[in-house]
Amino acid sequence: VVLSAVKVIIRLLDIITDNDKVKSVVKSMGPPLVTLMSGESEIQYVALRNIQLICQKRPTILHSDVKVFFCKYNDPIYVKMEKLDVLVMLVSESNIDQVLMEFKEYAT
Image 1 (cartoon, rainbow, N blue to C red):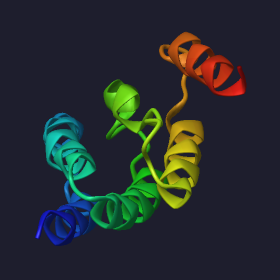
Image 2: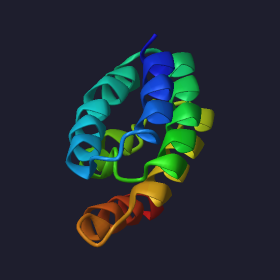
Image 3: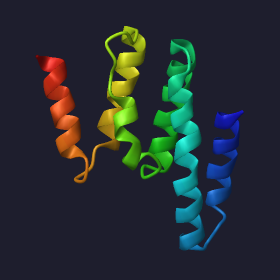
């Protein structure tokens, strides 16, 4: 339900011309997507695949929630790979230090 609602909202955002309204709506879309990351691995995988598509359209939606996509030791490999793809998409000047430190941890 969350993913369907987000997809509808993203399509409707193309119609809205008020930039302040768009920023407000985009800001409120992050938390529901983040909650999907606390589910089972299969749900996380589906959510991550959809989050990649959402980030292609609206890359600023999850910039402040980058830590949610850090890999956990017990994540299955298919979830880890998707999380890494999302991390690469979300990296910005404001969070590059966090992401690089996390990548350094993965390498050691």
